[in-house]
Image 1: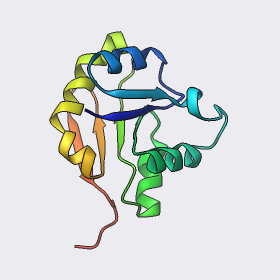
Image 2: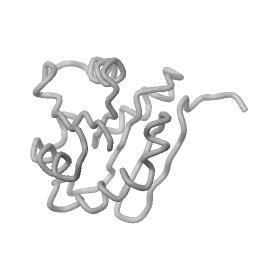
Image 3: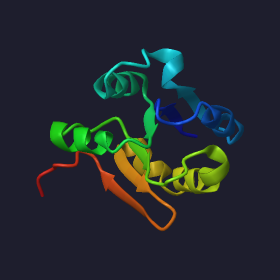
Image 4: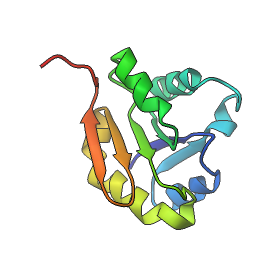
Length: 125
């Protein structure tokens, strides 16, 4: 079961779908200021143990620049991000990468492929 914080750029309709699939889910508009910067959303997700579910490319950049090991981010890069269009994809990605998301990861998914990078993104090898 994932704990997902749905970003403002995604429909609140995702909440019922995610709850029905057995996940915990909350839309940012329910817990934070809709006009707050993305950093506030990231801080809330980290403090409360949630994965950020977003369509915003800025979250990957923030993770890379900060070197942070959390929170995990699930980023969908599809043209149509409505639940009725990509719910099977999103639910499949959550199932497939549950361990990585729990560990701390950036998961990027579109209709053709999924990529996972373990956090922190700028780790030294």
